[in-house]
Image (tube, rainbow, N blue to C red; front, side):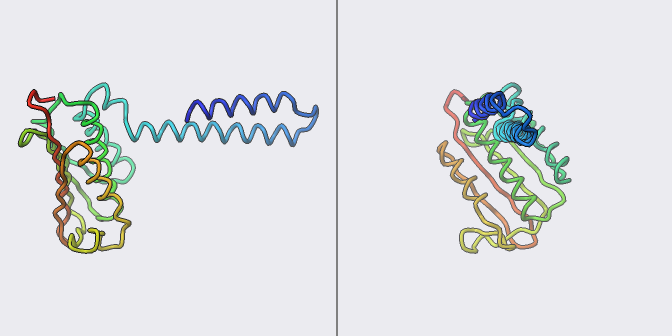
Amino acid sequence: MIQRVALLGQSLDELAAFSHDGDRQFERRVRGLRAELVDFADEIRALAHRMHPPVLEHLGLPAALSTLAGEMWATSHLRVGLDLDRSPVDMPPAVAAGLYRIAQESLRNVVKHAAASTAMVRLARADGGVQLVVEDNGAGFDTAAPRGLPANGGAGMGLTSITERARQFGGRVAVQSRPGAGTRVVAWIPLGSDGV
């Protein structure tokens, strides 16, 4: 996508070179489009960073989760505690990315639906795999409601996305919640017998 944006930028530059001499309105429009294109490229980079932050690749899942917790505080004032003491460090990059996205989507759900003041993220080896737990002290919801929709009528795609992401790696997700009692999302993904 960034390459396509760069090519569009080059095309705009070429178009500007063929502009009618002295046509200031045309030149202003081309400059405006170029600025919009630069903004769009920045948004793509930011989206890519949110989906797969460099810290995940270079420092691992525990460091990425710690960074995510800081971002949640900075953007939404959700205080996120971490329990990563027994965290598995070595795992396939795709599994680490999947667990990161599950944590990210779970915390987004907390911000969007739970009206919580705190959340907790736990990561540990469990039952031949790795377990990620995200829980909050928020409003909770009725898990027996159609498709597990939050009581406030949220879209419900977050839980579907979380479940599908875990299944992609042969894992599973359990959601425990009830109105007024917070929510606990438990994702488990198996690891090979050699621990990776």
